[in-house]
Length: 457
Image (tube, rainbow, N blue to C red; front, top):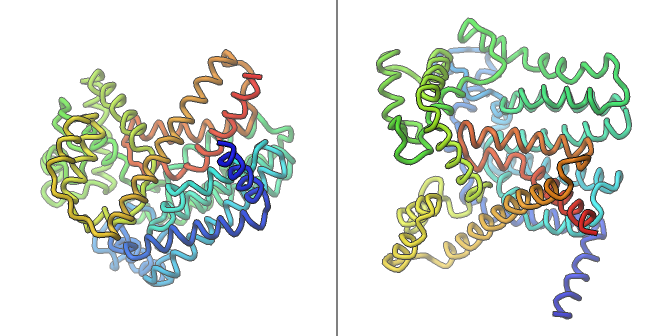
């Protein structure tokens, strides 16, 4: 035990050195990129549409779109596709931004003494494969999540220093972020009001946060106005997500399944728009939102059950586990059995899984065994972090009797986490969405642990 403690102390001492931390951080980023590189592809995550956006950006010709009237997904990643489909170049861009954002986070935490044990925080960060694997995929979520992180850090700096340039730059990054992922447009409005509440310097510059963001969405709104006759600041898939999200409750009363090609969704859209509908077009989006409201109002109890089940999913599968084994395209041995194990796990059918494991003839190569070990580790680590966040939050809240426990930064972090959790619970849970704010979970868990220790003392 003494030997293990000595080794741990040596590791903590080494990680505390800035140069060592940089080298280790770069090593983890490189490692996650290398083990994922073979399975990185532009054939997933709407990249075919982003390629069309790139063609449109170059030509301003609406005829390049295979789907007329397209307003989903939002076009930001199309600008990345202007560089061509070289996955190494795009991966380097995404990981360079990841490296910078984490170093900036590290600098802010040290500068304002926000984390008492930076060595422990750095170690927990370096072990965070859910975050590093998240940035290995060809999708806008990587760039958007880093822009969100840097933007929030600039807000924290603004609140610490009253330096208006920090707020201006944060506003610019949020505006850029919304062009990659529109999910956080409403969150940014909430953050704006928090800035007003917490700021010691309230003047016209405070209004820059929402103003600059909306100005940077004007080109997209002009585009959507041409497509639909209405200027839309977001993309048009919310109705689709809300509707199939009802299907995440197994055997639900609506007969909906949580898949894009849900039969119930196809049936009602065909009846309303004919066979050539597209569920994420503007009119279909409005229709599906209305249907979602009707279904929930008619059966509120079932919706509550759905929300509890979604929270279970969030707890058991909180973060992205990577695509090291190319699970997305089912290119790994025993994929049917793996999918069944996963499904049973979320429904807590543990006996069925034990039986399935015993009965199955497993046929993994050595490479696949390594890929599975990485994937299982990533999943377990993510679950442990999410559980730790919930446990420490509840302990701190109860012991302090919900009084005077949070500073401005911690309130902002909790609002961001609560916002993302609400989407998972009330709309649709996908681990990749929740992983966008993984660093906020990690940071808040460390801060709550600090508060727990201080309360205990």
